[in-house]
Image (tube, rainbow, N blue to C red; front, side):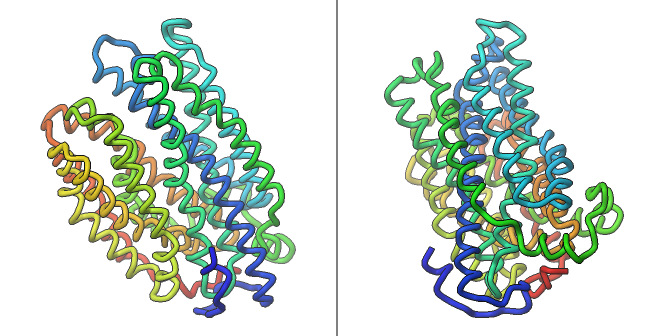
Length: 446
């Protein structure tokens, strides 16, 4: 984090605060607190995604057909994405009207209760149809929680940021999804190794879910110690109040930016979910690649995302958001085919290299997005606007990706189909980013 607290290079008008040293100290604490909470929320989400790929199908949706059971488990994965817009409405209203901090606190509590609940559920063998019904309910609550998490985390960091560093500070919570996945892998891989494949399927899969209890306690403590966004406090005391229904106002006033913002983020969502979630099931079941090989490849690629997130964001502060994101979108569109085509080789080293290059290109879209999407909307609608664009893109591009990929591979039985699908969505993102304005010098207090 040394880069965050060492320089004072202004680039445009980006914040209302004028006390650089104190502001940097506060901004760093807030950004780290946002990151901690986001890591925990995405750990919970990643644990579910990995478990869905490995064991939840047979445990909750036994059918005698492995493909159908896995498809049913991925349906519950998609269900949470469908619930995310509800989180946008609920937590967007809280974040724009009551405060960013309050919304983040409540979303973390909801995620923790839902995740621990999954770990305590009886399976179909024990409870019959009640088991999958309860699983779907808890999964929907997880989706509602994440619908409010991303917007609040990046906003709290961005609205505390010192001059010229909004993309850098906003990008710190962006490391949360890959760090959450790495944390989940750090728990799941040893659990698999100790319990074995059969032991994991029989009950050891619950351990990563139940460990969330301690993580949530840490996250709540950290988030309770941060200050509210200065932009929100300034607006709440003298600016235009947020409307009673922020999402409705957003659709009326900014329909074009809402749609283009969704399109800008949709390709990256597909790339990430197909790599981090779907490949963990597809590689072993369709291509005979060991589960440990796929988990290792995805984990190394996720670590690369963490490593390049801050440098990419710093570049976006220097040259602008659009040039960096356009490069990432074009790169992902070109690399998607060889990236997923590498699965056909079954070679762990080649797969790891291809996945790592792909997710580095993805980060060039993903990292600046944390500043870019909030900068598209005014302060009174910013929580809802940022959340709606990102969450709807994640739902359309990522939530349905495992289902669409399963269908594609049932017809073409080739990993190149994944590359064509993901590459096409990245071209959509490329077109939408080109259609949106540069936002680096946007006055964030307005």
